Image (cartoon, rainbow, N blue to C red; front, side, top):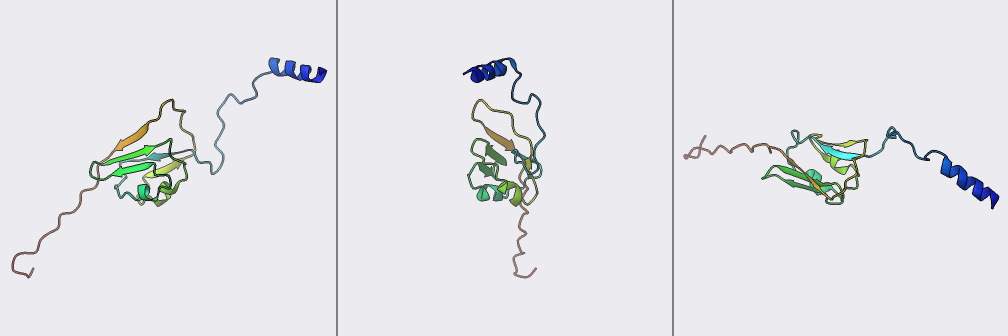
Length: 123
């Protein structure tokens, strides 16, 4: 009983058991997903390959949405992105108090117009 009381007293007067400064991320640590919307071509491959379905890409409106609460930070979207617009950052996001979907607005590339052949059959 004496040992337990001594340990209890030591824990009360000692400093915190946690570190006060942020630590450096471990090698290979997955933090969060970031997008450079200016590089995105809205091919929708990231949304199709996402195993949890947290990504929504709307090519017509030029929007890219991510629900960070649904994302499991597996990195599949970053690995399949053809233009390397999506990347995995080693640092974690700040804690959120409310569920929020991050919406990014970009400009989808314009489709080239098809040139019709002249009416005569031969070009």
